[in-house]
Length: 441
Image: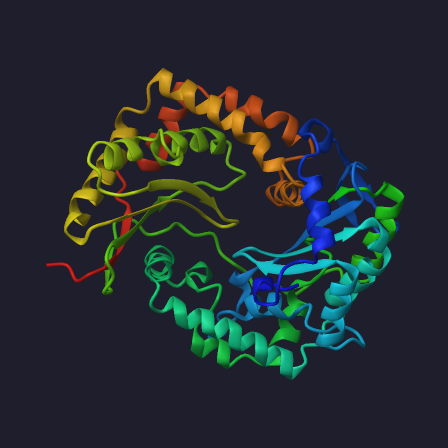
């Protein structure tokens, strides 16, 4: 189902129950990764586990919403919402009904740089589930009636976002940081851009993005390599080798910009960001640890301690690294009373400057590394999460042995590494800050 499955009802109960059981597969057994290449040359990473009869497949194509043409913001998002709305000879109603009958889940979604898909099925329905996914990937119909229905749903969400403080802040921050770069465009689009999209636009975007080049696949569950090879060829083997992606340039985000958007709400939303780091940068793990200490640790970070615990200015304040293909952000958020915004933002700036100038203590570094390594298994508590991680690792070029290496890489981060990367990313830079709330005096 498309990314708004909540609008259609839940995934069938039989599959939910089985997937829930699969969530408790021991991690040690779940991350022995095999590289599988089909007879047509389609490659996937496989974690084989026959504990329960479920197969989870995640995949991505290079090219996400940054591929939306000018004045067609939201096109790739609409593509994700309509890929399963009828395919081949099956109408939307027929396709969705058959998914429901088989307890099969098919989903599509998009990010800035990649277009994603997933399949969840019991092994007893794997063959027909593969047939349905192959139709959705290769032969989506884009009939007018379901396309208009999904446009209406997306437009409704876009209309709600026009008065949602978090959505307003996100759009304003993207415009302030990315200017005319494709990353500045809304992934969802606006009511105006969505309403102008046509079935022909969807067909063109499908042909541009859905191709073998840049395809990555992760599979977890009760399927052996030979079965997987058959599935890979069925779903992906006949796709064109290359699409027709637009060039997206590398970009350095703007810093030091301040934007306020008036909105009559009880609290002011604060978003702030600085240039971050891409996932393939050698300093990424050191930056990840540094971010945890600055604002990534939910109850232990500097920002949490200074802004919430000591002064009670906000319920939560946090930061995270957002690596893209062509740039990166260190982005944070908070919410506070309108008359405390200045104080809150000043404290955030102070902690950023403190991290750049002094860095953490050895004790803070040790505590951060213990948490980061100890919490890592939580990313693998379901088959779907593991399959998603397999795709993410391939997209980032991290290597098939990354699961085994990751915690040792975190452990190897030194205090000197964290201080060095803090200076590199934070020293002499002012965050771009967006506030959304009552008019400022």
